[in-house]
Length: 190
Image (tube, rainbow, N blue to C red; front, side, top):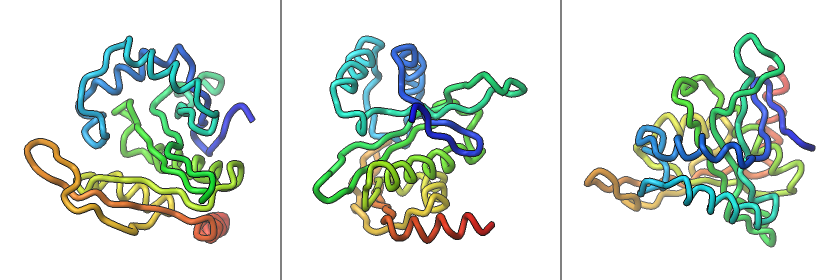
């Protein structure tokens, strides 16, 4: 299965040629505003990260979020990335993360669609039981997107994130396989 497809997106393996664009995204303060990145990252550091990623099992590899270029059905454009990490095979649980790096594609539903595709892959291919994430309370756009993807808030780390001289709560959101089957079935009826 070389790619995972949604209606408007595909998820594909990250390639060495993606390193430059990843580096541009993670050095953009607007893009990283709601990510756990604190320091600027050099191209050399990003190349090192990529090499380390390749040493991990494929289930831990970052996937690139591509959309079809306008008026070109055979051309794809990278707009972000996502993936599983902190995979716990004994409990069949994994944390997920996502970044839409191309700001002109924010608020168009691509992140929600990518989450749907990634969660489906987690449950149907990786046989996970629970998929979860952390999101800062100051990120209402992200919270809405995750709720649309079927995740529910299950916990809160109070004032666990410090940024811009202020502490923010961190929400824990998750979806269980049984809940996903229910939400997936209701999506099919629409």
